Image (tube, rainbow, N blue to C red; front, side, top):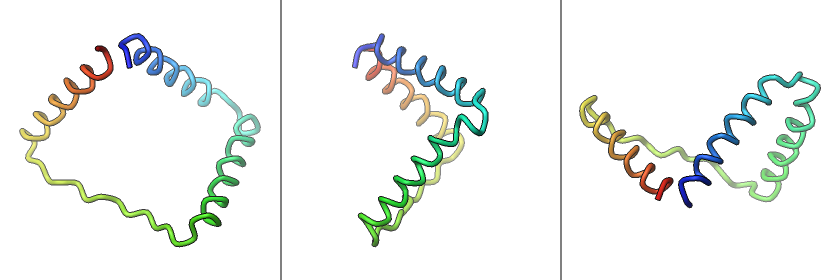
Length: 81
C-alpha cells in the first residue's frame, strides 16, 4: 500500500465518520437493520462460535510508550513506503 492510498483511506474514514454522526436515526436505521441481519445470519452459520478475547500483556508505562513508538514507526513504514 503506498502512502497516498493510506492517507486516502484515513481521510475517507474521517469523512464517513463525520457523515454518520450527522445522520438522523431514521437515516441510520437501514444500516443498523442490515448489521442485525448479518449478526443473526452469523449465529445461524456458526452456532458454536464464541468470541475469545486475547489477554493483553502487562506493560510498565515506559515499555508501553516504547511499544507505541515502535508500532507507530512500523505502521508509518508500511503505510507510506
